[in-house]
Image (cartoon, rainbow, N blue to C red; front, side):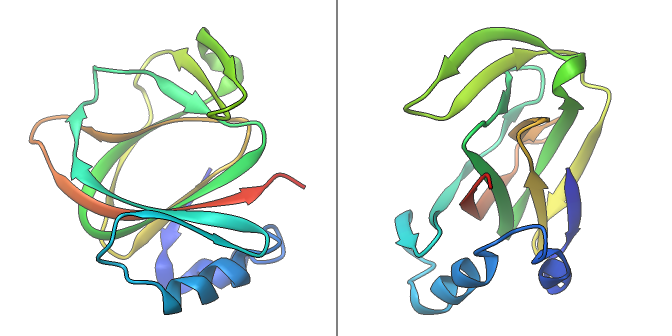
Length: 147
């Protein structure tokens, strides 16, 4: 898991082939419209909503895609753990590219406007959450294929 400020995102381009293509696509799409947008080497999803209590739901992890989640507005709290420390509760769904896990909520951080995080296949992550107060968010989820 990588967590950083958006102005540092290109420091990670050597780890993430096609991230520059995704960032170029962001310059030409309407960020006010939720939806899915493809680019050479991946796709973007613009998502908006409200967080749910951190104690609800499950962790997720992906086999085919690396998640880069960029907070455009508002905030969310995120729980993270390595897959070896989580327990699979819903088997891998190839169509959704997701396996669901349960585990402790030991590692959490608040992601605010102008921040991003990168979740690799070994990163169990539980986004769109809050510990105390519900938060509204708008974010971009960039999906890059695992090399």
